[in-house]
Image (cartoon, helix red, strand yellow):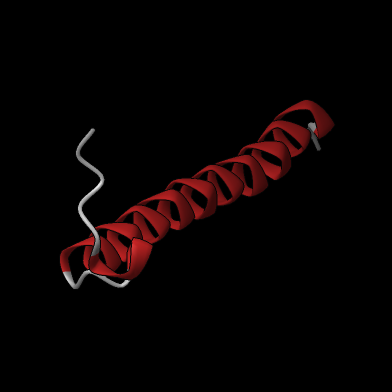
Length: 50
């Protein structure tokens, strides 16, 4: 019975899961913004060129 290895495994799994969820969330938000921008839904279809 080695609690150190168990604690490390127990900590690694949630951390990896959280990191993957955060990365996936950022990618999804980025894709949504790109799609909305392509469809001209942001800014009422007015180009943001300055």
